[in-house]
Length: 341
Image 1 (cartoon, rainbow, N blue to C red):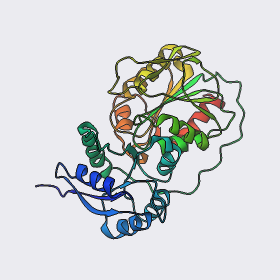
Image 2 (cartoon, one colour; image 1 turned 120 degrees about the vertical axis):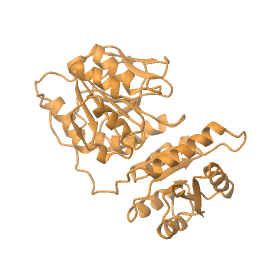
Image 3 (cartoon, rainbow, N blue to C red; image 1 turned 135 degrees about the horizontal axis):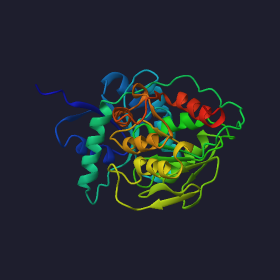
Image 4 (cartoon, rainbow, N blue to C red; image 1 turned 45 degrees about the vertical axis):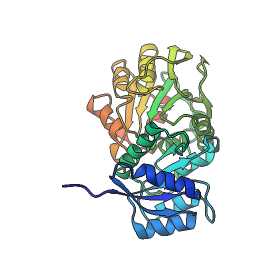
């Protein structure tokens, strides 16, 4: 029995790009475009009346912005939204769209010359996200607690890996940590090329901690380091960050597994690791190594993930027996750093 095609709503104020996105999406025959909206108001109306399985959204829209359209759509309907942007330099705006509930982002397709690999990747992402879980907005998170470090064994570093749905999960996780959080936090977030600097700037607005794109050098307490493009972020020693362009691990560079293995090697029980929402298996093998070295390990609860395959992979190999939504993972990090057990 042939399954029904995926119903796609395209939202873009450029007729040229809207037509191109529609042509790319429908090329394999398993996706159909049920509507094309040219402004934010029309996008909200079409979402309500056409019941699409997934929406592609440009953030720069007339009448109401793509950000406002996302909020209004997700206030009533749990529809996966993929942000397509033509300019990575608008990163803060793009990642704000993810904070408001969009699930993922990709660059707009390059029309000339034609990029068949990127076009196939767009179709595959639409298929994946059409099945993804959309968690409608909850009430505003509680402010981070005002607590001070105890005299317990020092936590020297935290590693986190995330993919699809990760920016919103990371904003929730880091937003719960106070400016006094003592351990550096090393983040591998799978992103398209060109978006890392905008992501780091946006994430810095979501947390009281300082956020930097990582560079090789001393590992400083209380800093959030984001892996740069096309480099593994690892520890070269207990107090030194290194960037490597070695082979991809688990299909990724940067890789969560590469990061966790370096934490296991250099810090062992004085490190912690987390696998968050995302597709694939990145992080699972490395998190298991960290657990075996005595480090604290967690993963995001699959029920709270936009895409749960990374979290389930970590659970399946026994890398952790503890899973929770991001706000509770923040509590676990606070407990490990301030009230060591």
